[in-house]
Image 1: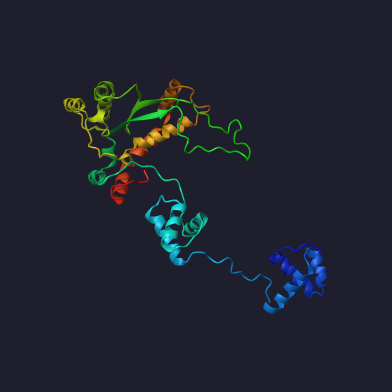
Image 2: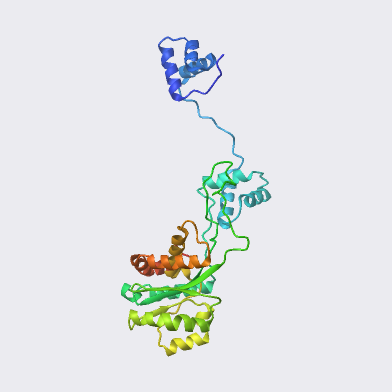
Length: 342
């Protein structure tokens, strides 16, 4: 006897057609490679319901009630980083309902919740948010011509071996240790370089390699005096310096130099990288360097590529970043001084 198998809707329709044409049930079963009893039951069901589709089955009963489903959703929304196992334990402690972690995930998926890698952001206190709101309220109505007067500056550190949190490798099963599928790392780390840069819609300062720790004295003598002051003079008499509140930038000696050099410095809210367009310049620079293959072999080559790619970023890209300042202020105010998509 042929093995019984499930018939598709098309096969059921064909079977009913053959039966109505006078073909015997056994012959129909042979044509479709099923047991004759399958065709007989199909014929009986068709005579009773005039349908060839299978009846909808009730399926396995749900182990949780609608009230428990809402409890699961509330737990996930109240503590966004809780694991499925954490929520399972709370459900059991509250309702005595025992479920698996997969059931918790299924209920959350049904409500549209998915586990995703969180966006990383700086810690924001109430004072930080208030300062950002005040700054954005003051600058949200600035025109592009005003932002064109600002020189945005910052330092950034680049590692010879980038963080591997987002690196993925394409491989088949069993190729875990194949050459090219293993991310090789130096045992004691590859080191890093720190660079300073400045951008405006009118000019871009070449990257400056900061060797060792940057102090207020070094910031004044190696960056402000030889790099920033000439750049501000080139921008125009209304040029404005933007730098963050890092300790070297706000030392007493630096503040004295700023006053003596008559540099117009922009007050900047603490912990507000979302407002600084040069942060996106660093991201773009990192992406460009990571596209080099093979990766840099040493710190000297890394620095060379950083300087090369920095100069290769299109001017239009920089202008778009700086001209996004109004939208940055708008979104910061909309998020009550909190994190934004920038």
